[in-house]
Amino acid sequence: MTSPSFAYLALCHLRHDERGATAIEFACVAPVLLILMFGTIEFSLIMLTQGLMDSATFNASRLGKTGYIPTGLTREEAIRQRISEQAGVLVRAQDLAITTQVYGSFDNINQPEPFTDSNRNGRFDNGEVFVDTNGNGGWDADMARAGLGGAGDVVVYTIDYPWRIQTPIIGYLFNANSTVSLSVRAVVKNEPF
Image (cartoon, rainbow, N blue to C red; front, side):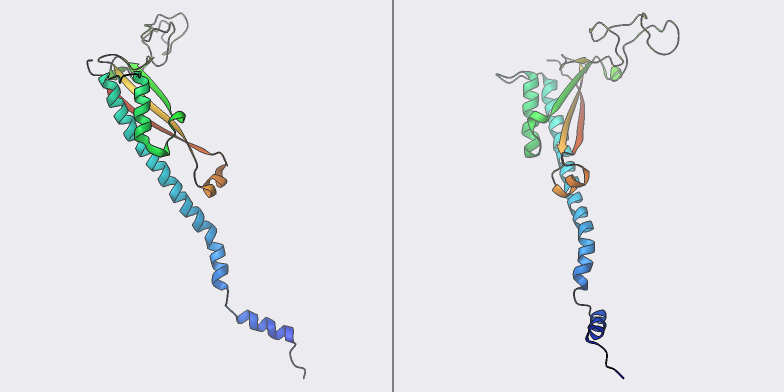
């Protein structure tokens, strides 16, 4: 009877050896754990920025509705400055897109300019008579006019910000230049100023 070979004994020994199994298990679980961890961090940063923008927009709209104009600034510059001060280091002020729409009343928000539907098809057609509420010379599906409005006007402030993905792993999963569009809206009625 021949004795077992050295290679056979080594394989039998390795088959029962469990050293290093934890390292292999961790290597399998680590990528999922890292993606979950960095995803949570990214989502938290996005929610924090959204909250900061919401608060800053609310405070800026409060400033805008009073008609207050600081010395050396326009109303729009004062509002932009207030938002950048309040939003903190997470938001770059130059990347903010601030849009304001002015309406005569709350009922007019997102409403088309009134028109006479001559052919009764339920939509505006060229040649139909309309009321040019925003004064731009043409019929619009939204009767808003640009600006910050006057006393008693309703103003809709919309702030948009392109959030760049901050965590490298999450950015790599989507795209190196991935952005998430953050948007905040505040509706106020201007005080009599």
